[in-house]
Length: 311
Image 1 (tube, helix red, strand yellow):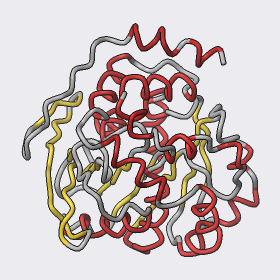
Image 2: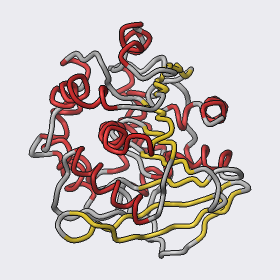
Image 3: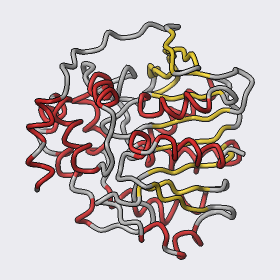
Image 4: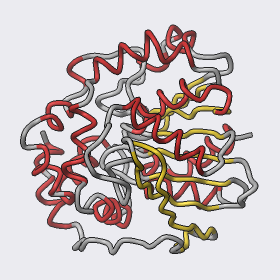
């Protein structure tokens, strides 16, 4: 309650965040020593095509790393990782369907449906084999992608989402995002981002990252598109699918990436030996010294862990 009571103050303190002008295809942006390129691609999906926005950095012939973000984020969630890994990896940070500058029209927003469409995108980009790194609500899509694509996924860094254990009190966001008021709640990107980071982060996040996160969540159509994911499934349904259908299909090593102090995802759920025994050989777990949003809370630790994982 103390954190929630500070939201108004933090919203007022956050610098003004006017909407960011959309990038054009081929626009470049500097991230540290790495120059990334904004790309827009129409790939098969929803009976016709789905337009995807992604950011690409690194040598075109280097090993590929695909990043999927969560709520209320975008490709920007991975900019520290791209800055560090882009010198020797081809990094593809994708705006999920419904987020950022990707497609926001009506269509198939089931986790499995979006995974099928992502596979079509990767096929179009001629990505043969890759490492997948996910966070939060990008992870249910990633779970399906890993199950579908078999040996094409070399390793899976599975971030910050329920896995083998689930408790109904630990996913209150389901009620928020399936409420009739969800579009109006999400339309206030500034308040949504500040609220999420205030409640779930344990370490300070740079104001510049919060500002950019708000901007990337402010594009037209996001507030109506994102709830479609939650209205197409439920946390319980995802849990059942993982245990009965998806996990048995995973072939690559899985590294569970969790914030040690996320209030809604207890660390014991992931360090349980039974959980690791259900995963493919070579799997493990890393607990970041952080809350939920470790890509921004602990960027140096994240880079160290990912570099080791990619060896």
